[in-house]
Image (cartoon, rainbow, N blue to C red; front, side):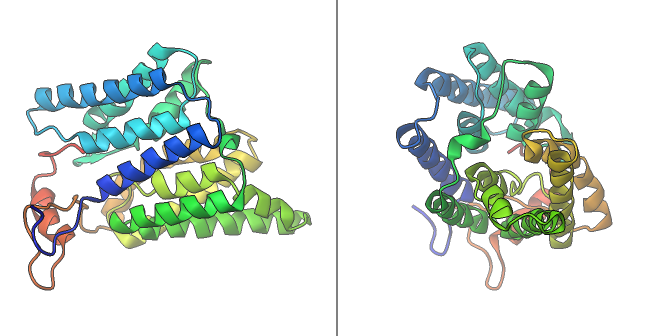
Length: 291
């Protein structure tokens, strides 16, 4: 029974939204997603999470692993089943290995996509698979808004959206392009999914609000440079992977309270919050949980 006044873990909302998007993409947008590949990613991710938790001697929590697995199902494209399973293994394993001061250094889905694209020719991401229909973008934005608000990271999402949109529009204005061109670039389902579901990861963003604003602006600037100066595809993925090592530095320069997922087992004190309740414990022992 859920305690009075408690709220559900925001990861449950994110799992539901990602599953809904996967179903929508497969059924309505005819994604090239094989059920066997999705099953391999999900099973491998949950299995690796369980094995790593046992080795680390911590309680197994499959929710974050499920989020990473669903994200891979949405974004990863490969013709090889073993590559899909390897991607899930690397993504979940990175949460346990690539850590700084108790935090993930990279978003698991982001880093595995970048590594496999850079090191093999068997993996690709298809940004155009989502199309540019305004109604779909609005749908994803609404669902994503629900998720990031529940996860207390709406600030970094909207800061990145504002910075990236401003840079894209400013570039087109400087070049004298008609406004339809930057608007078309921003009407991209993959961009909205990145904005609401990847850069907003509360375990890989700076602890302070000021740090998150700075981080969002840097990621937007680097993404525009990669896309418009280096002419590389998947600029958002490359930018986030390149900028992620800045987070520990921003946490030192602009310190803030460490984020911890809220618990259903206790309600916050009057005037308090779940973040404060859980954060006070995990700030002392950030090594106890890998999520």
